[in-house]
Amino acid sequence: TPLLHCQSYEPELVADANLASKIKHNFHLIPNVISNSKWIAETLEKEFNIKSLATINPGIDIDLFYPRDRSLGDERLTIMIPVSKFLYRGFYRINNLIPAIEKEAKNRNLDIRILLVGVNKVPVSPSAAIALGLLAPTRLATLLGTEVDLFIEPSINHSYGLPALEAMASGVPVVSWDNKGINEYGTSANSVILADSVSSDKAAIQILDLLEDEKRRESLSKEGLKVREFHSRKKLINEFIEVLEKSFNLNYEKRRIVMVVPHLRKHGGPTTML
Image 1: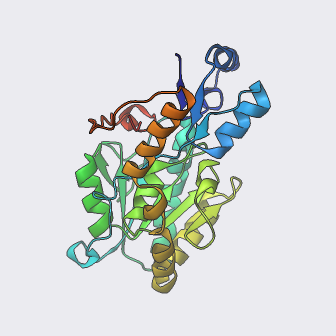
Image 2: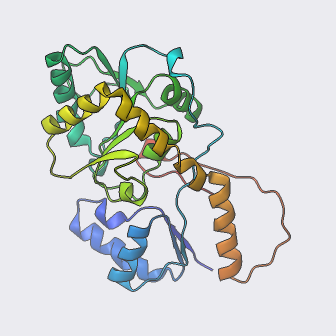
């Protein structure tokens, strides 16, 4: 029985209109769909009359991503930005945002660090930003918990947005452009969501304002930690299995399974649950 676990809406991720059309046609070939966000489920139903079996959001490894002792890290205020050369991940924003943040910080005489995850070389020059390359999840979790004060999500389109969720689960406030996925869990209480039209210069001002406002960052962090309750990977995997059993009338004896989680982010894609 064919089943599509729809973790992204590919027609919006490609620049070629012909390729997008071919991808859309393929949705009719798979009768059973589980989506990972409400907006994708609604799009599939509206565009193709495909009703998802369920919507199951991405799960966080809460045993890996959790609040740690920030005092163990560098004392400078630190921003982390995930960087991907895929356009839908907001690469063009990075080229303007980094100089804008550094310029605004200089105007305020503020000594900050900018950590770039996902690239081995800083995409703009000159810049004092630090390119960390691809990080193992354990290293990323440690950095989020001990070194980072603010996480910036530049993506244009996200099915759900696991990087921002991991930051929230680690107690790090998030600033994100409206990439659709962020609206599934982001609110004015736990994050800062910028309109798509907000320029890099204006975004830099808001980012630095928040970076200097420790009280507000603490409030966002406290609210953001609530995602841990609803986005536990173990909880969501159990939901996934239950949907399969109910939808296909499966009745297997309960047993411990091996969870395989291929990290496809290095290729620009999402992280799967199973």
